[in-house]
Length: 99
Image (cartoon, rainbow, N blue to C red; front, top):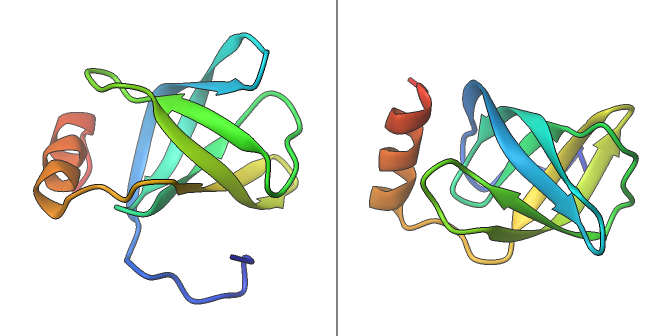
């Protein structure tokens, strides 16, 4: 998915910290800017490439596998391998302070 393609779901703006990891790399704390059942936008401290596999850990959840869908300077769009169930998504948004 490129940055110009329409999104499948509206993203909820968030401003919280999650853990981010690339293959064979350390975990980094990163800012989670927005979140949808299918993906999110983060600001990682390292460059990543479109198509790269990464992992996120949202507080209180198991690690989530995702693919880098797009990059724009230091912002990165991720597409989750397995979308969140709507009820789980709503619970996570409430816990992370989303609207």
